[in-house]
Length: 183
Image (tube, rainbow, N blue to C red; front, side, top):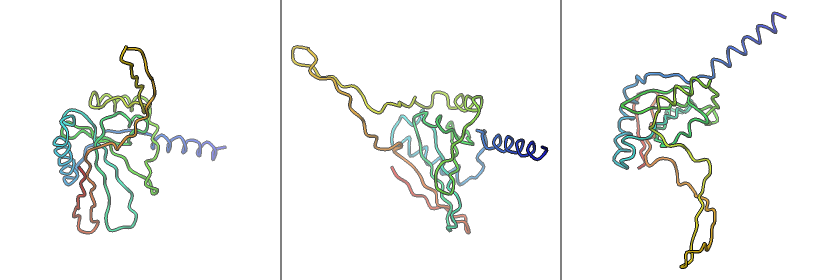
């Protein structure tokens, strides 16, 4: 009986530990500099990024390669609500959402308590737009006399999420960073 109770408590404790969304401080100066560079690049690409958007930081697991990989990219929607990060940070007026990927390069599902998600959403505030779940729109065309000619639903194909991103490849031995940018 004690064994069962101990295992049950261990399961509850370990599942509680994994399900969190905590605010941290980014201390690595090279990552801080790269995020600053991303902010400047995005602001130049489109003025909307000056006041809007969150930054995603995707950290990939050590695969035995000589370089560690971190992706930085911006997002204008609240799509992160479906799978909030385990950690986030404030940096230069932006919110950085930090995701650690598993060995299959997928983002593990993070079911956080509602009060933690609410705290994250309060920090994000009006920096993002509400993501539209329906991808498409109704389009109406009219005849010259003003009568309805046709009404149809057109699906919209998305071309991507961000006009700019930076991939950091960090050499494990020397600590040197190579940056791959897309604008």
